[in-house]
Length: 404
Image 1 (spheres, rainbow, N blue to C red):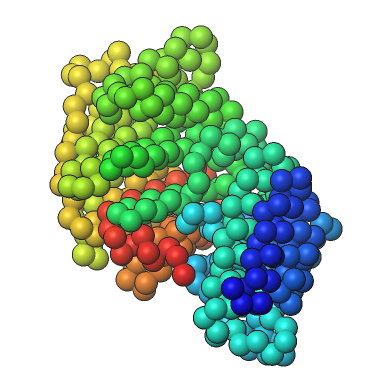
Image 2: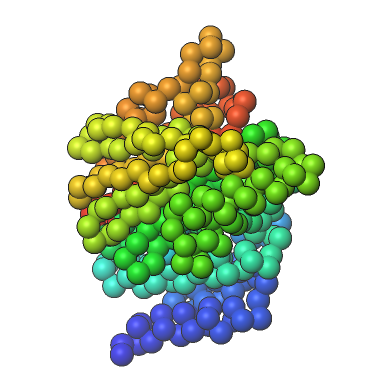
């Protein structure tokens, strides 16, 4: 091992060993100590929950950087490593946990080193990857990072829901799934879930009646019930039935928000066979080759919690995907968002924006971020309903598009 490689190895060991007894507030100091061993100055930024600002982890704060108008933001948007010349030069790198975008890190290179040098980029990428795992681990027992990521205080319902949800982005060799919820600080009744195991992907989206803590509790119950069914080896129909019973029990005990709409879906990653259940929710949209092929809207059943009123038992919908197909799930707060003139955002605009951003080569998480910004802009930043999007892409190339 060369002297430089040994120095980088020592820096990584310092982060790993120091992390065991570090708090989230110690991250900046720990990174400074490690980076000094390789003659680098490093600055870590985490993205806010609305994905508009990159905020320094240094205690006491530091200048925040806009995602939409800075080099740092471009590294975040594109999940790409961006060199910047100067004296000294630097690298901007995305900070990921798996493929979940957490922020960026700036690595200022001293000693006349070339930011285009492959070995330097690889070492900096390894350190950035380690930081991603470290940030995610500290989130579980740190208020510092949670507070740092909030530009607006969360409602109690939002606090509850965000703690239940999986990371907003996941990818493996055959699949990418990503989701976004707005307004992030006051979302009350929307939610999503996914799991990928043993060659199968499960995704779901929920929308409970109301926008307060009661709606949040209903969504939490429906999500927990379907997750419980899945982990007990039950299928989609059984999961819907268990959620229906759990939500109905909540209503029977005198609590409001007695039902939730939902789509539950299951994809075989080897064959592309998709099964789904629609419980009173807007249908999933099948996107293929730059256009919408169809809405997966048959059969549609009553919402979760109202199963006792159904005249027919729930049945599975089925579709066979082709490689590269995408399934777009959304709540009605997206398509029914109205501008001051009363014009709805609509399904056509939703599909058009999704396809245009995809055609521009943007990673799936960035596509949804920009679509959600368009929904917010349509209502001048003041959504009247929760707006949630989830995009599933069955593709080998899409998975690699979310990494540098």
